[in-house]
Image 1 (cartoon, rainbow, N blue to C red):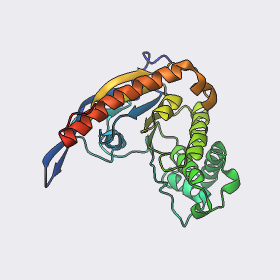
Image 2 (cartoon, rainbow, N blue to C red):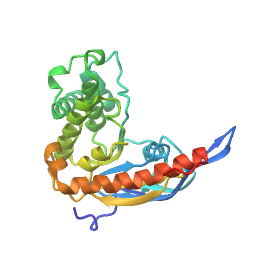
Image 3 (cartoon, rainbow, N blue to C red):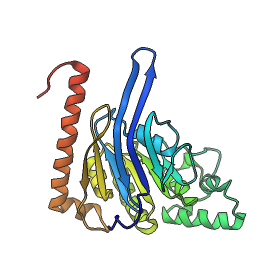
Image 4 (tube, helix red, strand yellow):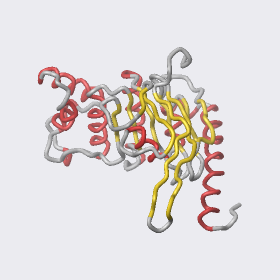
Length: 273
């Protein structure tokens, strides 16, 4: 992928996040974090628990303030939430009183599009995620994987410039999670929306991503940028059988283990092996 001809879709420069707590005073959760995500890239953030992955994603979404530093999307500073960034959370965040179709169309309520065009876009993205036959169903009639597919369709329907995904498959069982990963790959290959993806699952990050940023223990910074040199389009079985997949997995897990050990030592005051 040639990323040098155009400016980054997302750029974070020297970002800090400090929480103020009653018991501990200032808590620095992020310090001098810098990264870039280019147009049409799929980039993942991984790291030990508590390193600030989800906090950073919320800052990019405009749902969490920046203490210091700068986050820009298309060269403009992020100051608030915006329709240029779609968000998919681990919880499905669907309205139980609306049908699948109505849940997806809800994202277009302020689009200004005529109702007929809204309906066409909703049906298009329900087809993308394989749920056109369930458009009249309610969330409580769907499996967890199907609900998350609705959430993905809703995030894509208003055509955001960037999709932000926070552990979107973390609540799913192992088999459903694998199916959702392959579905997301297929949808991304068709749509080529720029994606920033937060996950604890190293295999998931490698399968999906062009690049993986590994974060340090708190205060979170970028420890290393790892390029995923695996061909696209990808399938789970073929990708996992590639020797490069095993090499990347071992390298990233080693980096995270180093940071997780530091976290444990900070919390317990004991050296770990």
